Length: 240
Image 1: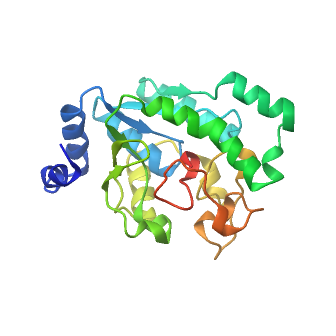
Image 2: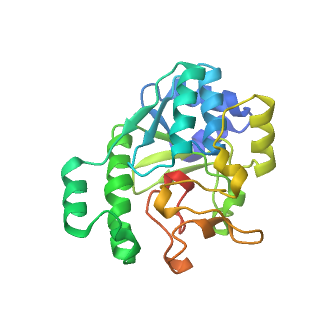
């Protein structure tokens, strides 16, 4: 089924029913990527609390915040459902660190992109392989270039359909949903981190700063992307 036909099927359904429909239509071929941020915790709750058969996975880069590992573990305890971890390939990671050291990403954009590729892009490709629907936590208001996106779209780079179930939610919507459902969330959000990825590459932002200012802050704004979502120019929290 192509995107346009699928959009027609989904347009009258609520968020939970959309996820249920896709899980049934693409049984065993639908996957959700979580980085344990606000948005992803809300979607994880939608999936797990409603027993929707969608595989949930995360990219274990080896450089996550302690707070992120805490949320990961608590999520497993609360729902008693698996979250599949995808790790970097050992040889690729060892070669990079042996040659350039553990913090080479600070030295150049090329080095940082190499690190992103090894720790995130390549594992993501493995996670997505064989699937037809990729569920993400992307929201429209997170960056200007997302305003032209839709909640359902074709991902040419990964050759599958991407579905963003909370695409039209505001941040206040997300926070309210988390509070109403008592969902565990990353406390770094309360300390000025709107986006939480690898610890060495993420910082809190100041009032008035751009949403993405906390990512790769030592780089030119125009170069801030890692390639997880190829249609974007700035990546997606822990996902990019």
